[in-house]
Length: 369
Image 1 (cartoon, rainbow, N blue to C red):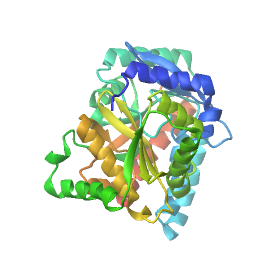
Image 2 (image 1 turned 180 degrees about the vertical axis):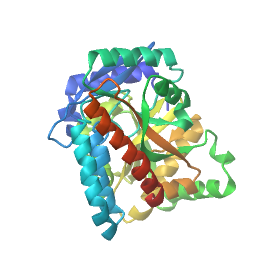
Image 3 (image 1 turned 120 degrees about the vertical axis):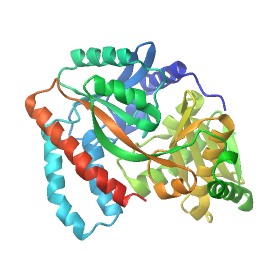
Image 4 (image 1 turned 60 degrees about the vertical axis):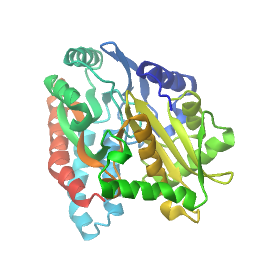
């Protein structure tokens, strides 16, 4: 698998969005977007305004920290505890609306669940681009998503030096940058067992460089079964056209899990300078082997990263499962800069950060599975 150089990747992404528009690629990612330079590197940005529409959590702080949290309380089954938490949650929502949190400019935001960063972004480059964004958008908070110490320690330090403050977002799993054969024995055994299920169940993998219309519709359906129907409608709602274009432009690398001629699973991997993430994952929940398909998909991701020497960012979700197979927990933050905003918005942003750090953070550690 040959990954695009970073510059070609972001230009392919921008070209796709400019040609087709978010309405045709992912309707709940509707916002202004484009490219901006950090030193010699171009990265995508998103720019939002407060709207009545519920946007995807990857571009909306309100959705991520309010609508998504309400859903999570139902998923983990808090029941009586939910009644106690609802009043402060309503207060949280009021503060976010008062702070106009979705009036925000987000640097290096693809709108995917995880943003990966090019290497060697200097502190001076970060300072320059932040000053440029602040001057051009004086009424917008400035955000940088998907920052964790495991992969972005230098960026974290550079951003705090520019006046950003960390706001806890989620726990993510990072996998060691080494071949499967060098994993601890018990974790290696789990991965190899999962790999063996493909042959045992009479299935096979197919790599594709393009998707037909029918295949893209099937990929969209498999993703939707997992991310929208099982988890949350606030996840990105990617259309079949999105998958067709991402495959054709090599933005994402697709692998299809086949049962004879039927597509029953999909992995869509993105790679930035040796670091991979998998924003597209899905499987047929009605298939006879549905209970083990997720194991096969994640084993394929691990094998691909092992074979190509990729560091793996495994995002969040199924944390216990991923830890058993070698994942290491890292806290991930959204870096927030608001010191140029009105005192009222700064106050409310401060309350939001406090709740995210002091309430959301411990609850995430306690209830994650």
